[in-house]
Length: 262
Image (cartoon, rainbow, N blue to C red; front, side, top):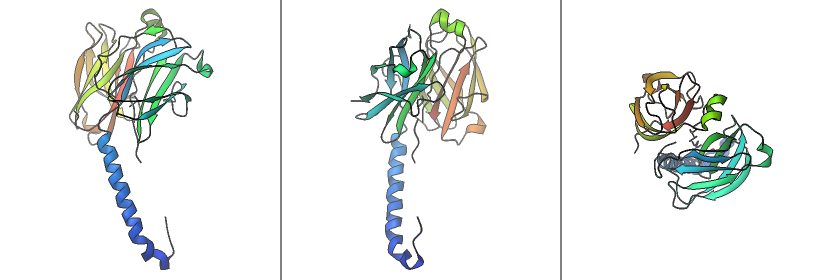
């Protein structure tokens, strides 16, 4: 989801040393506040798509009273520097639905990335097939990360036959985290009776070739919760990517802060 982030002459050093030190302390204090705020991870889910026209999303865990710039771009860009399509004020924050027009320069694109970003370092990203489809939405208020700094971060099936025949976009949200111990997710629109390999890896990898932590059978599919142990090689990291993938070509990925929440 989000990232936060001089030498005078010797004769002038004493004059500037104290103000510089004060400035550094102020910046550190501000940075600490930003990190505390970021423990709530804003994410987005794809609710519906009208090909070459609109996409409807549902937010989760959004901070209140923030002006989010909405961008769309080619698949793989995470929406960075994409075409600005709207500005959305988060109002009371939390979960809300909103629909955006797909820009003309992306008409005909098979897959499109969408990103919401606000001053203060908050952002979420996701992507969708540019095909008319209605996904079963997550329950309002269900927390999670897209891209969260992400994912979110939560994709659709990789195989064209699967997407064409079902128009179902499997996604999952982050429900809770126990630092260096476990993460609990909630799925949405998962296909039934498939064995999903669960992987975790460094942020930015989308979990590709990550450490295998479990295999989950989707059973009846749809929505269910599952808890996975954080592997030892990722303990101590600030952020972790998680990915579920099946032999039939379905996959979904997201990411989370390795910090106990809620």
